[in-house]
Each structure stands twice: as structure tokens, then as C-alpha cells.
Image (cartoon, rainbow, N blue to C red; front, top):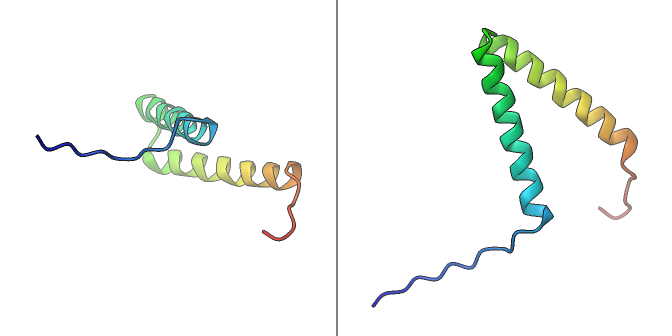
Length: 67
């Protein structure tokens, strides 16, 4: 019998949290498209949200040396 084993990382916060964030983002995008927003409007909202998140993260997260 042929048995293939694939080593997968354990499910910790480094794996689960990004997956949950992606699911929330896709549900949000789907809801916007269902409410009648055009794909162009959705892309503008996503771009603005990413810019705001980057700015907030840059101000709140401490910088590490040697990165």
C-alpha cells in the first residue's frame, strides 16, 4: 500500500489569524458586490483601507533593529 505523508505546520496563531483575516476580507468584498457596488468602487475602498492600515501599523508597531 502506498502511503504519502506530508509534513504540515501545526495550527498556531501565525497560521490561523491570517486565514481568518482573509476570510473576513473576502466576505466583506462579497457583501459590497452584492449591495450593488461596482468592482471599481470596491477596489478603491480596499486600496484606501490598505493605506490606512499600513499607516496605523507603522505608527503603532515598534521598529526592530537588524531586520
